Image (cartoon, rainbow, N blue to C red; front, side):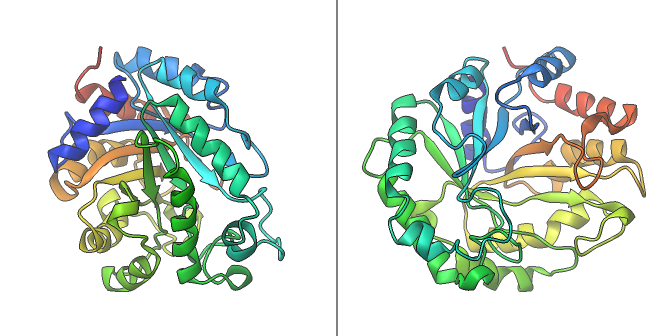
Length: 314
């Protein structure tokens, strides 16, 4: 698998460059409709390293589906699944870490995924229960009484089930949250309280969003990629030596040049200021903001140019 090889090489290199940075996309149509992957590969004359989608325990893509993985893997890309332990309802007072995971209520379901992924055998990224603090997700700390200790125990519980099977092909992505004006000294104790340990994590994840002035996620103004990532990155690098992945990256159009933001992020900021980052996955959708790459011709052109500057894949 081409994408799997590039991810391994990028993570082992110890530092990112325009040549070894793995690039990926998320679209709501993935993995059923991979038209966007075709478009990307034609435009950049290379393979897309990571194809990202979400799977909800009680909703979209709930049941393990090997065909989804094979369809992506056959193209030379690595599947990344954000595996969300809920049905997609923010306010569910009956959902707690204790009830849904630690009680064993979903052990059979978790086991079905572990068996399926072991049988699949090819590399994939599993981003389990992401953004687990200061968010309304029912697995987040503080929601319905959940604690940091319970979150760590839930991670260990799920990993113990996977360890019944030969699942070394599964790369676990641990992905805490980031905020506008927090400092590394604010992030670090929160991250440490939620970290399951290097033996149970393969990748450190962090999401990067430049909201611009139109959206308030803690910093309602235009920020460079470097401004967004510097403090959480420093906290992560203090926590562990594991490679870092950016599973969700997005930039608004309002407030500055999105095209310049993309160009500087991939070709300048990452290799120069964030050498531990081995991969970046663009959140290619219009949701809270116009995150999609086709929000302007300048943004799309910048992405294509940056992607071409990586090593052309066979």
